[in-house]
Length: 251
Image 1 (cartoon, rainbow, N blue to C red):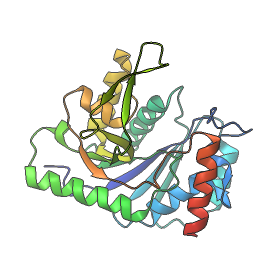
Image 2: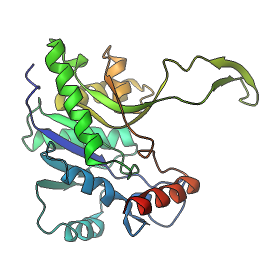
Image 3: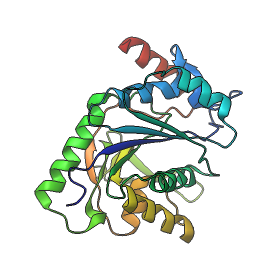
């Protein structure tokens, strides 16, 4: 496949407001265990040798925040770009950022790893595992269909899963969890393949909740690579408190 030995680029959509968490600024820029939450993911991607560049999609008018973040990395070890590509939804921000990368000359066949800025528990080891296993699967299967390329970090569901009644007040039935996985990020796909899948999904008004769902919508079957419990998404105040413990213990 043309993508097998192509470079990898991290894409971090960072235009959201984090309404459910509260606070007077976007959660990705709030200090968590000593530094802005976004920096934990940045540090992990910078420390991963398999990643060639890091791209941040910000809201228009984010110049003060961009200046502050750039000042923390005066001599970045790899290409480091801030783009004012934020849109009304996370999916639109990702699409805008991918489109800007193409316009700036990034090869359409390069890999992109889209990661939630609100997952500061990511580690260089997890990123490298995803890249290694996706590329190994690519080589083993010798794909001729681009939609069959790519994969994502995820975790097998451990809890008993319930389907609710229509009013979501009572349990209707228990769902077999043996084939259920909880999606995480990064999610890794060829740049142009993901761009086109997201573009078509948004245009169709499809319910796209992550990058993999855009690929699945067109018939793709992304590889599931086991992630880690610590790579959870910080959404609610309780998540913030738990992540503070996780990061403080690691440090």
